[in-house]
Amino acid sequence: MNTPALPLPQTPANASVASPDPSPTLDSATLLGGRKQVAISHGGELYSLRLTRNGKLILTK
Image (cartoon, rainbow, N blue to C red):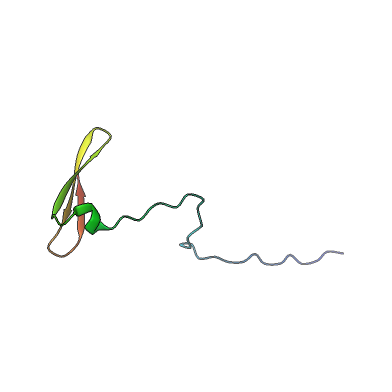
């Protein structure tokens, strides 16, 4: 006798999945240290993290 398959639970496409090693959260005020701009060295390249007048962050190479 065939029994009907039960529907699988639906999850939203943007639902977060718990990861075993969550990324740390760094506060932008801590990164900037009261400044409007800081330099970040990554992979031998220098990047600039800048705080705009509107309170947005811009990362440029």
